[in-house]
Length: 279
Image (cartoon, rainbow, N blue to C red):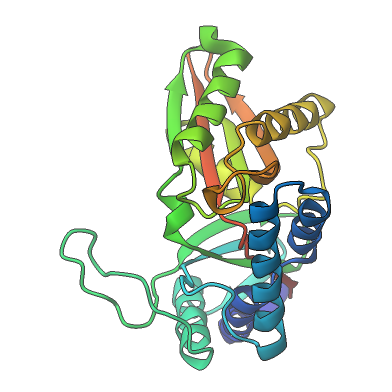
């Protein structure tokens, strides 16, 4: 059994919170630059140029790519042969507290959803845990802005709606979102499970590199098909038209009940931020 002090989690999460807000993943940058190279619409080209310039400045100066530094989503994949000394939730929140303070990142979390008083330190984090084989901890920090989060949707479809119902729901969600989530977007889709699991799968899908298609060819094909359909909507960068509305569609799935077909769509703006480390 490997022993890890909770303070190690705190230090690493603080670091990743800053890095995730300032450094766009390479796969996202590559897709944005590829979209710029193939975009025929002048207005869209100008917007993509500004997006590229913006994340270049953020990386050079280690400042936030976007003013909305988001709710901090933390994914912990904990090896079953690891024992963490200390309170995991407190350690995670302390890491977020330090990272958002030391990185001068905007604090956007309110303590109560109705009374709306800011917590002042961007805690609590949205914490997701998973038990895995081994003696390591993989942790991912993903700041989630709400311009895109607010455009996300979940539907409890009927099994008879089938794959065409799933396709229609994904397309309708993106079309109704329009320019609001700051396209070009990344679309995370969760299919199956229960009401809550579908939403989790959609969020988790956004953590997968856009260079890695689903390992099931059926769902990889559905990812490609939906990306093509979404880009034919013509919403384009920031909603001004163009051929790139989405950079990628990532789908995660799991078994479900014979009477259900849960589907969730979690949209992320072009600032699809996440940073991963292994302890």
